[in-house]
Length: 434
Ligand code: 4AD
Ligand code: MG
Image 1 (cartoon, rainbow, N blue to C red):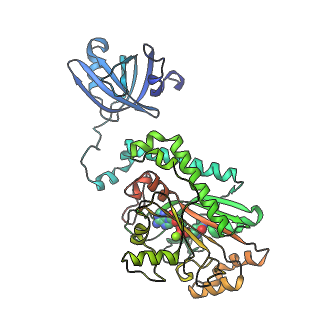
Image 2 (cartoon, rainbow, N blue to C red; image 1 turned 180 degrees about the vertical axis):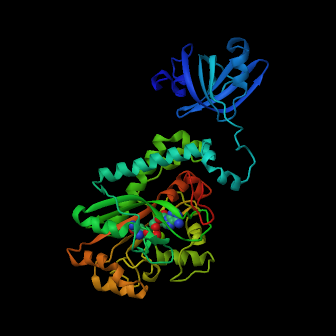
């Protein structure tokens, strides 16, 4: 049968649909039968609708077959659209024909099962309403990012994700055997984006990044989607301005285009629509003072971990930037600050409500000597970075860039408790299947 002969479920709810005959096709969300009437809720990509089937209309054989369809079995129904206040959405399809395409085996997922079991059955669990809403909103977020970057004349590029270099040093890099030589999964595409910046000035990439961190926290994945941007002729002000405009644009787009999904997930769309730039800014030194005043055991040089980020943002409604981190805390490529040489020109964007870091960005060190010194301090092998150092030898330019963790942003926007709920097949230290 051709697809055009089938009506999307959403058509049942069109203003002029009542009284019309439709043909709908999809999967059974739930079903029951009583007194010779079958009640089935059918789902397709456009929505769900109640189908009723009477034994005297369908005939005893077809009725029995329909009664035996399992949850997630596939069916095709012809019927008339009718108003019925008892049906979800106020309408139903009264079946004149009920065809069982795939009756299915009993669906193994139902209420009150353990999280571990659901993760084992993730390939089936992702059919849930929450997951469908999450991944549709995520798709909208990705579309919005691309739209924004396109408008800003930033070129999409395709850096590699496997490399003989561990971009930011060994400990968190997944190493594997590459025909007898060591190779690594990308932690960041940044170094390649810096190379691609010279012929293009403004570049971005959306690639998976990998972190071999054994952090079992609600915000760490071992594989995540990384949106990275690199901008020539850009300073810290310019970088912060770019990041906040991008995040506001994306939040507004998701609020406008996926309000039903947001509402279902417990994020009122108005909260994202209300977001506006500029975001508050805080220097690292001020952040430390604030945290110390709240009684946290921090001093100059302490890293801001989950507890610190939470304390800084739990009461906030807007993301905030933390800037000017101590040089020792950050990667080798960050530009030393002119006004305080103990710090670097860096800006992290923290989500409100305690969700934590979403973006890490900085101006890049352009001086060859400073870069070589930092590589040495961090014990990184200079020979592996020679190609990167070449970029400083041939027409170096002031530039800045950032990396945004897509799942971190989704977690905040969609108020997901755990980051694994923001990606269909989460990779964590304890799980890389299914
Ligand atoms: O702060 P990070 O480590 O920065 C970089 O990798 C830079 N080289 C990026 C750049 O400037 N091009 O990572 C950037 C972002 C973090 O802010 C966070 O949102 C996300 O990547 N991230 C993770 N997301 C999920 N799981 C993890 N384990 C993550 N580690 C980092
Ligand atoms: Mg970071």
